[in-house]
Length: 121
Image 1: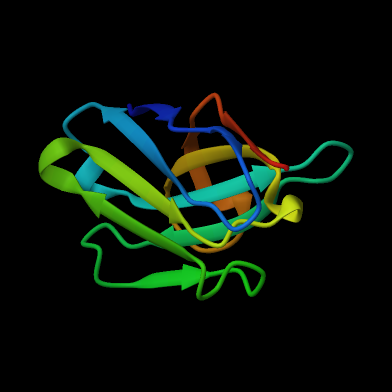
Image 2 (image 1 turned 90 degrees about the horizontal axis):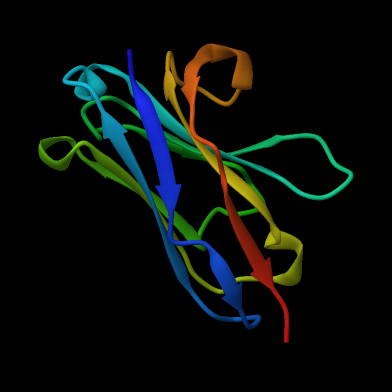
């Protein structure tokens, strides 16, 4: 069993940066692939980025490629999403997830409660 808690969201101006964290409980976090998803008001949840259990493989949605970086520190049971050059269309609730990995939400068994990111001037 893994419990996930996101933090680091907030209000930022366009072009700014935020770093989201995903703190995991349980000793098995390092055995799971991890992903970040987001859901904007009135829209479906969408894939943002994923990372393998070892950190050796990453994947990004085209909309964030080159601007966002996913990483993890298994020693700290924590995953991260560094978001740079933020745009208003990045506004959403961001969720971290742990499980089988990939870009499909159904592949993930465990989800955090989400953290709000608002990009606005």
